[in-house]
Amino acid sequence: MGSEDDFGLWEREMEDTRTEGGAGARALVLVAALTAAGCTLLIIMGQTPLGAAGLVLTSIILLLWRVGL
Image 1 (cartoon, rainbow, N blue to C red):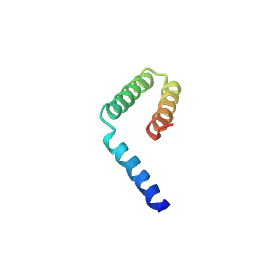
Image 2 (image 1 turned 90 degrees about the vertical axis):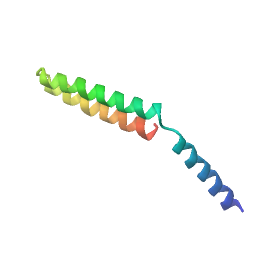
Image 3 (image 1 turned 120 degrees about the vertical axis):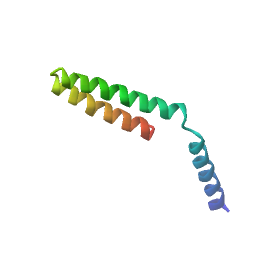
């Protein structure tokens, strides 16, 4: 009976994440687009190391945000 209860708990957690999204996902896409545009602008202006570092750093931050850490 314990495994059935565990499965029910897991199933409810999965349903909660499916209903989530909306504004959080849009914010993630907006932040990613703005940071990519800013770093691209830095690269175009001649600050290639700074732009590349910004892209790497924001990629790590967005990945951790998406994972939920």
